[in-house]
Image 1 (cartoon, one colour):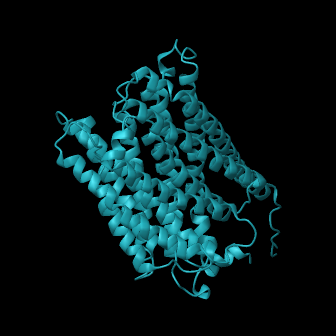
Image 2: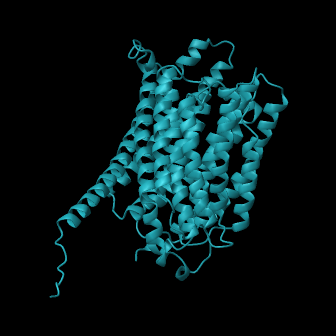
Image 3: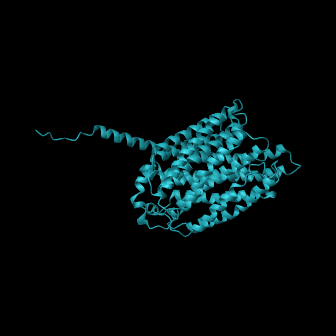
Length: 493
């Protein structure tokens, strides 16, 4: 038994003897999740590559504005929303749902029942993403950030999510009586959060739109709850499961995690309206206050991670999954601190209407969530499928490209946003000059996007190679069963 297999007996920080856990039930639990995970993670890998390509093309429009000038779908207004939605809806949400399904099955010690339903739902989800992206390119976008998909795509996403979420909750309800772990709190809350905010936003903005500035308030509220709160709940739920597993010690501590969960959910959900928005003053003030109070759960979460990881033996050798999840955990703390900084009025006056907010969003979505999911998927998939990755050495290359590309992207956009904000606030500087000041930083960010594209391609290569290997093993098994000789039977006279 490897060190990782031994550490697999620690469930999200629960101090439970190894003899009572994984050794007897892990194989059937993993096998029950195999096909749903292959569909969810395979589609997520494909959409991640699509998102990286679109983001790179959108960035190139600043360097070669005439390159796509002859086609309307090649403008920044089409490419960037499509890239953002492909990353969020195409990769982040299905990857998070797949990880949640597996964690619920593992923590509940119960195989996934009726796996056909989440498989069908996963295909519906990917179809909804395709319909939504096509809608953006043909001009059928709603025009609201992170909610651009037309009604047809949104309906497919909502129905598919309900099916996957219900099946995840079925596994949650089948856990042993009283077995409740910190990962459960975060993941269950996320499962309920998405259908609430997604249906509310679609009803009040797209289906039967309300009038006036209320539309903008709802859109800001939805974007914050989806981009920050949902990804934080799922990403931290996964991190609180895997960090104790890799470090070899229980989560430090149970009550800190409970306090962090409630404060993060409360303060994180009541924010989103930016400073200076043309709305009643109490709305941005309430949002800024809750953003500042986010410092409380962020400090507690940082303490939990520090006490759990620092000084622990960890897995033998250099484990890429452990490195990615630790990197993602640090990225979450930095992303939340940037949120707190952007809520300060003096700093908000400097960074609003600049690229600084884009840098914070990319740090949250890619630096924290995507890289955490990379680590989780690299750990989960070989155990669920029973096949090692075809190119294990490329995982290290992917890890380096993702981390380096993310650092270059976020650092260049953040620094450029500050420089742009200083010029925008200087009455002696023309607006065109403030825009030109970003060109150098945008060129650097394009380099970061190139590295992220390479990381996405390497990730997809390993995922698709595993899917093909699994299909080939099925073909070989069927062929062996067909050509096997029939058993001889004795005929009595």
